[in-house]
Image (cartoon, rainbow over all chains, first blue to last red; front, side, top):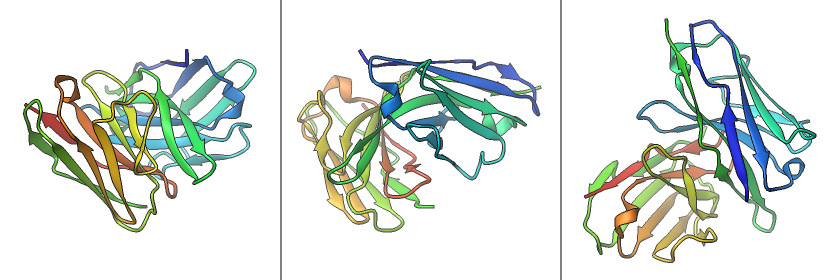
Amino acid sequence: QVQLVESGGALVKPGGSLRLSCAVSGFSFSDYYMSWIRQAPGKGLEWISYISSSGNTVNYAASVKGRFAISRDNAKNSLYLQINRLRAEDTAVYYCARDVLEYTYGSRWFDPWGQGTLVTVST
Amino acid sequence: DIQMTQSPSSLSASVGDRVTITCRASQSISTYLNWYQQKPGKAPKVLIYGASNLQSGVPPRFSGSGSGTDFTLTISSLQPEDFAIYFCQQSDSPPWTFGLGTKVEV
């Protein structure tokens, strides 16, 4: 079955760095765009980045541009998020999700999502 | 960025009730609107995509409607497993943005 499993979350100090991973199975990873979405404790959802199926196109939310870097390794069925210069407001559960695109009408949505990995930024 | 405004932020309902949640976009997004359900400690799950298309495996008591700026998610007869938080999300133009959520509780 389709499965996404994130890892790499940790407690880090402000200014620190972290690399999150998302291991994918059950579908042809290299055919899909992928996204990272985060959720601060008790808060709503914030899309932060996507990467095209080939990895040639990326996009970021303004709140993370210049500090976060999304990448993928299609040979390893893995998605990554490098997070630098961490701030307290980056504390959140980070989800990876598959971008599903319906070509007839151009609809796109996130399905499925991984279980998430918690990043806590604190002294 | 396109702002998504959901209402209400929370509602109390009983099993069997008809529940309606609304989502308004700050500009027209055609039908590029998705609905997700999130239960405590779990990842969100898509219910409706393209404003009105039911995701495979989702019970038909869930339905979506709307286009342009105003959208609705309806649960025709609330079941115990439907108590959760519901989010709308626009996929018209990046950055993809979500509403703040509607908590459906007893």
